[in-house]
Amino acid sequence: MATQPPLLDGLPPSLEVQRDEEIALLRLNRADKRNALDDPTVLGLERFFSAPLEGIKAVVLYGAGPHFCAGLDLSELETRSAAEGVAHSLSWHRAFDRIQFGAVPVVSVLHGAVVGGGLELACATHLRVAEQSAFYALPEGQRGIFVGGGGTVRVPRLIGVARMMDMMLTGRIYTSEEGQALGLSHYLTEPGRGLDKGIELARRIAGNAPLTNFAIMHALPRIADAGQDQGLFTEALMSAIAQSDPEAKSRIKKFLDKQAGKIGEEQ
Ligand code: 1HE
Image 1 (cartoon, rainbow, N blue to C red):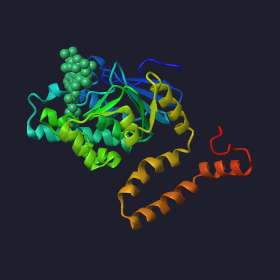
Image 2 (image 1 turned 135 degrees about the vertical axis):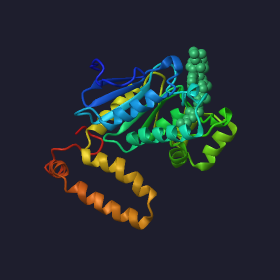
Image 3 (image 1 turned 30 degrees about the vertical axis):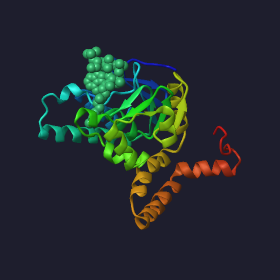
Image 4 (image 1 turned 180 degrees about the horizontal axis):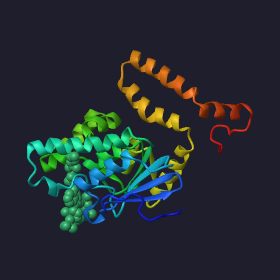
């Protein structure tokens, strides 16, 4: 993998970017604090995902050190007022919305603690690869606080309100195997294999037509949230737009000319 010096000026030292051709690798780089998310890191995430690098078609998000992310930097809570708390939560929503409804799909690679805001961050990404060391928890109840990074919206869509309630009320921790069975992760790998798997998946995603990736990221979750009537109509519109794109026409011609691979074959 070719690595380059930092690509974006203005990102905090807690975020490190490298480029591997069409893939950007974004690392949470605050291992001494278990990648706890402080304000500069959350603003940096918003900045990075608001203006993706030229030519990048997918992002892999991972964490330095023994854990993916220990959630909110709790030291920031010592003096925060209620009004500041609302603004803070909204700043996380902005940053994580930029991930979920951004320009390119994001694959997160999870290991060790994926807890509190770390789980909220992971749930804003489009694919999750977990190493066997990953574990999931929402210790907000234990800390006397509440989720604020979109967890109430995104976590139940993956595992249901009832399981999230249990995690928050009792401090229940899910192992990587349990998380895989529940749908918290899409892929489970052996220790140390997550990043390679994440890059492999990101490369496959980068090979899709950009408009198809756009539809998957932006139309699919909105349609899933809509009523059947609106959903089906929106699907018809999105489908018509995608199939009329020149990229779709050229890919379909290649298949009909027997120049494109079958399902599962390299294109
Ligand atoms: C932190 C944080 C943090 C570690 N904020 N400083 N999140 C939590 O409740 C999780 C709290 N953290 C932990 O339970 C543990 O740190 C871990 C299980 C994640 C990792 O344990 P370990 O033994 O590897 O590390 P450590 O020794 O506990 O922590 C290393 C350092 O990181 C230490 O600082 P140091 O100066 O003593 O070296 C810790 O204090 C620091 N650290 N986690 C601040 N979270 C938008 S709302 C979201 C709400 C939430 O996210 S609530 C969940 C908060």
